[in-house]
Length: 213
Image (cartoon, rainbow, N blue to C red; front, side):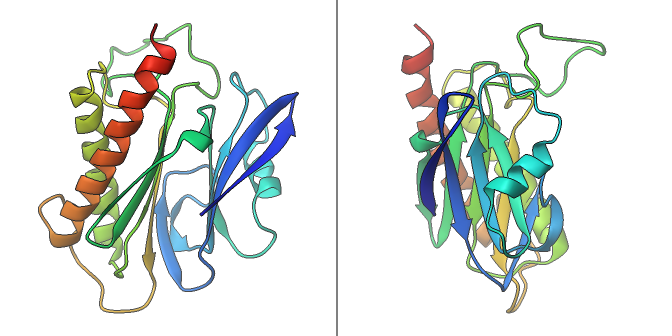
C-alpha cells in the first residue's frame, strides 16, 4: 500500500493504492470494479467534500494504474489518517469519516438535508486475507466486515451502523484450496472481524476529538 497526493479544485487530496498484480480475486461494493472477480489493484481516493462530478467511475479510472482491472472507491475523509490492524494473517485498513453516521433502517422517504452527493462521513474498508475463498465465503466476509464495523461504531459511541456511502473490498488469492466459510465464527471470518473492529474503532475514536467540538 502506498499513499500519494494530488491537487484538485485547489485542495490537496490523498489516495491509498494497493498494487496486488495478477492472481487475486476480490469482492467489493465499490463504484469501480464492484462485484466478484479478478482484480489487480485497489484505490481509495480522497475527493473534495460535496463532490458533484457526474463521472465518478471515469474519475477513478484516471486516478488508478493504467494496467489491469481494479477496484476504486471514494471518500471525503482524509485518507492519510488511515488505520491499519492485523490478526492472524488478515490485514484490515480503514479510512473513517463520521460526520453523518446513519442507522441502516430509517422511515421511507427520510432525507437528511446535510447529505451531499459524496458524504463527508464515509467509512471505506479494505481487507486482505492470505487464503483463497469460494464466492459464498467472500459474500460472507462482507457481512462479517459490516457487522464488525457497526459493532465498533456503537462501542465508540456513535448513533449508527455506518454511513450512507460506506464501501468495502476483500481481497483473497485466486489459487489454492478455497475456504467455504467467512462468517464471524469461522477461522478466517473471526480474524477478519477482529481486524476490522480494531481498525474502525480506532478510526472512530480518533475522528471524534478532531470533528466533534
